[in-house]
Length: 320
Ligand SMILES: Nc1nc2c(ncn2[C@@H]2O[C@H](COP(=O)(O)OP(=O)(O)OP(=O)(O)O)[C@@H](O)[C@H]2O)c(=O)[nH]1
Ligand SMILES: [Mg+2]
Ligand SMILES: [Zn+2]
Image (cartoon, rainbow, N blue to C red; front, top):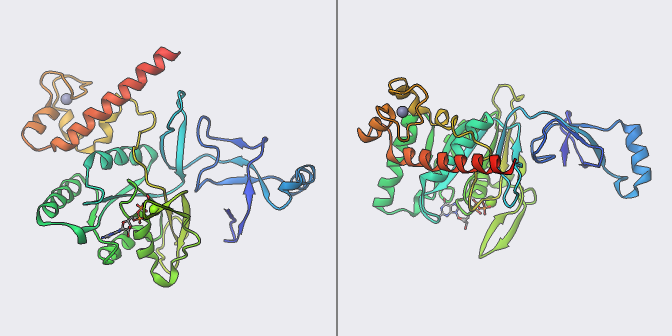
């Protein structure tokens, strides 16, 4: 479905003549802005292909202002899978338990959000289920990410707790909700929409292992949540299917350190100008990890992602 400037929706599809301003990536993603074919041309096309008769044809997919991308699974070439385009905010959703909280995936999404030009907010769901030790762990991560500068909320979609704070964060923006499968993304979206507004037909769900699972990304308007701003005041959420693994797309290993923003105030004190903070002598970032000023969890995410992007750089060189 395509939303027109006047707010109405129409059916539209790509055809073999569709042009794209975004090479080597998903042709049309949720949130993409497109130019439709000239209606006269459209009629001609439609007459020659009777099955298209009821839809508009997409002439061109326009450049993306922002995006959330991942590396496409199961492809040898560097193909960018765009999960959603032209959104303002990435809501990284995790849960304290079921599935258990791991900071590695949060750090991957933070890097993807920075790469894609998105504002970042983190929501840790299911606090109604936790024991005291699990709560301590959740509080540890809350303080860690808040100190770095990312708003983090401990919430419960089941109890509708913390939902008002999320609404304040997303008001007047278009947000994408992403995270592992089963963490409660769709439940949070429903809690935000409120019972009377919950359009279950808009959320595509399929029944699997006793749980409802989102099968495709959809853009949902949140009614009655306005805030003056760039996007005309309206609020939208893109609910996405959960992933098992999230592989970041095409990170340059040399640039990765800039996505770990808390490293930056230390790196000017590194002995070597282009320090990677991995093995160089006199590294101020590694010293800060030892002093517990930089979190060891964040640093090991950095090491892991660095290794990963180094590997794919080597693979690319070998395949040239
Ligand atoms: N106890 C508790 N259960 C929750 C909460 N939020 C969601 N759940 C449950 O967790 C399960 C998964 O919730 P979903 O909202 O479908 O999760 P999702 O992240 O959208 O999952 P995918 O669509 O597969 O990515 C469901 O059984 C929900 O009822 C919560 O705050 N507390
Ligand atoms: Mg879902
Ligand atoms: Zn260093």
